[in-house]
Image (spheres, rainbow, N blue to C red):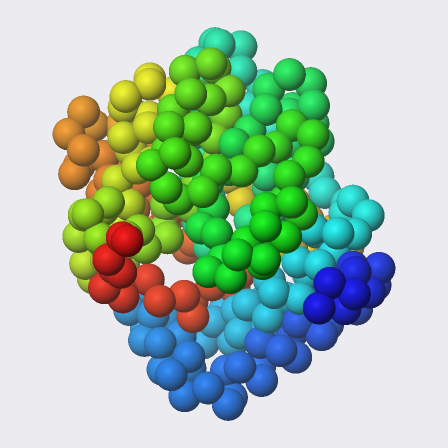
Length: 276
């Protein structure tokens, strides 16, 4: 498997994303469960067919481009809204980056590490380890790079994030990821209650860190990515439930700007698993 992934990582991004587009449509056509969930989610959000049809292929690109991002040579990217990072870093406070399951969320962290992490402002990214130990070790090693560290979704990982923020560094999370039971709250997301992590709000409230929204938009024909950065908007409420709702609404607004690249097939409304 490692040999295959290394071989794929050497291919041009255009080729990988083309393969991914096909993979996305194969999954949509042949998996009734996936297709049903996908269509229910876009209907709930009121996404026009002209937009969600594009999202079918984009979901496959998300998977196919990973070997290049983890093992291949650096990809091309440009910034949109980089000044928000520059301004936030001058305060010396920690930074919480919130990224939905949208576009290429791997490249957003890599871009930050390349331009800021190696310059003394490292980022720690929260991720859920794979269930297979060998795969978890391999993915963690592939993601680690200068200026970028990873933290697992465990108590130790949360402590790692808190330590980074208190040191004035940055952390990155996917706030629309369904957390384990006991680590979230049922909060509306596109009009339907979804079990939502409270960690992102707690980190910001407990440390006084600033919150920025970020996501990596795929450019057409394998030409790289645009990493968008925007302020959260109004300050987070001191009430944890209200702050969590604010984050969900911010994610909704961000997704509506480019629903073609949101991962609509993600089981956002599933019941949380028990945390062993």
